[in-house]
Image (cartoon, rainbow, N blue to C red; front, side):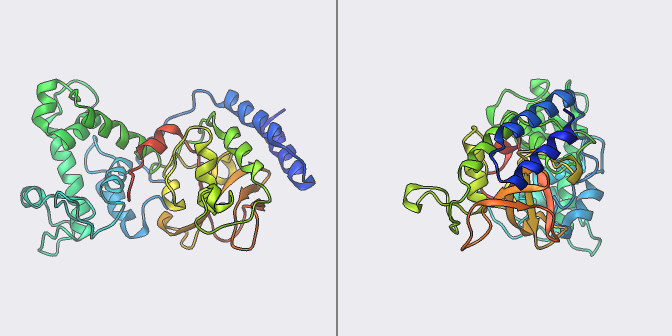
Length: 335
């Protein structure tokens, strides 16, 4: 059975209203067998809408400032640091979208937009400054053994001296986790290659969602006993992937960053599909469902409705995410 035939079978079963989770399991693992060894994302081009429209050109331009950096790595850092919030202040007094401490800004902040000012709060200055600082660190550690981008990220977290002294990423758990987290998160900001590996957990997530068909929608619902086992859209997708050991954020626009983004033609059962009020901005996502094949998803649509099958093709279809364990673990706990 070809992948295309598997999807057609899935669509026909949806139309017939029958149980079809085993068809989906077969489809997912047939595809898994066909795609072993798929290419890794390059990170030089940004995924559709992953970076808010207001910052996309800045990230695309300044993410190419030096070979050790990429737009996807820069986007991952900014998302990790601030969640794209240009006014956030951390408990350590790190400020703005790039979370510069004032003393670091004093020596490394640049006038990115050429208006004669270096404004820590202005993304037009802060994003170029973050890229410039990354590339400056990359120069400091260019002769250190190992991957130069990893060493750059480690220097950003722990300082260049520690990287040089250790001869690579130092054995500091916080720094090692930071490097791994940013690299994993960068995958969700990079335009994917022509092929993406499926995940092993996809069929289990679909199975969970299918068992909830007919359950009434509840705004803010997470399926607790006190809520009568009811869900809203992102509560359902969160619980479905939690059932197979993957912890997703609570809201849909953060779930979008839990893995790479297949195109419409690349969708596989288990992918999360998203809908947005703004086709250029993942932060404007308002709905999510679990793709099941044949152009359909299982979703919790709205108050007054039940968890059901719905078609995915509509004017507000935004894109999809192939959820991965590494991608989910990389997401910041608060953005």
